[in-house]
Image 1 (spheres, helix red, strand yellow):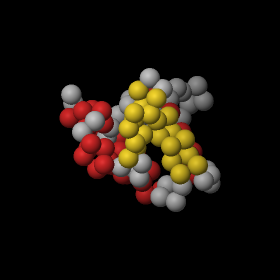
Image 2 (tube, helix red, strand yellow; image 1 turned 90 degrees about the vertical axis):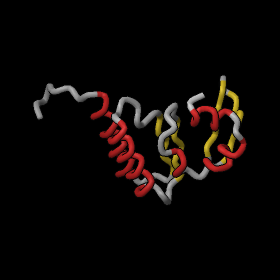
Image 3 (tube, rainbow, N blue to C red; image 1 turned 180 degrees about the horizontal axis):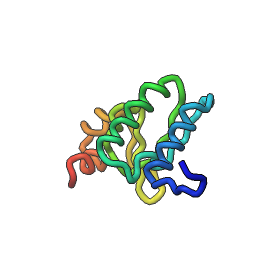
Length: 105
């Protein structure tokens, strides 16, 4: 790669995720890690995160709902306030905001 080459947004995100995977930290904070990625790459990244970070605490901020069923706890916020919290199944059963998002309402 040329020294002056620019990375795309998706390449920068993948590089940041790779760095997080290689860093031996008990807590990993990911802010919109799949933003700008196509659905296939997003699924691959989320699968890799699930495999590699099973013994770590992962806090992921996202507006995208794909792959959230893999997480032990999901917190739904609105205007800075927690409005729902639970597992994927629990939140769907409540038929609240998370359910509405998943249904595309």
